[in-house]
Image 1 (cartoon, rainbow, N blue to C red):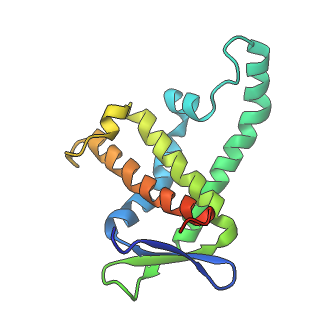
Image 2 (image 1 turned 60 degrees about the vertical axis):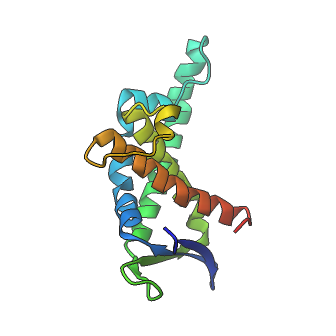
Length: 167
């Protein structure tokens, strides 16, 4: 991903350029990955109860807070998916793509990418040792999930660096 860049564009917009086909595939799979967030172990990870001992507080959390969080998570993925519809060829790099979206969508992108990574991590019971693996077999579902976690994590890192002024 040597061409991948995140930068400001005129009109309070952000451009992600140098998106190679591998990253493009990962990005296009984010909505489908996140749809799996209702699996019990994933749901527990995304919406953990606030206490281990107060059942009333946990019920209130589930009834009052989780629906709003779910709505925010859904909105983030929807924003990212809509933005991806404006993907175009990157004139600077053959076989690469670029996307430009409103600066105020940045938090949604970061949320959607993080959700996808968490969902994959829980669905495939990814451990810290797994994350250190370097010899991945893309025919193995867990290895493919690990690869996607890393690729989406790299883009998330670039977006965070952009948001914090490090890039």
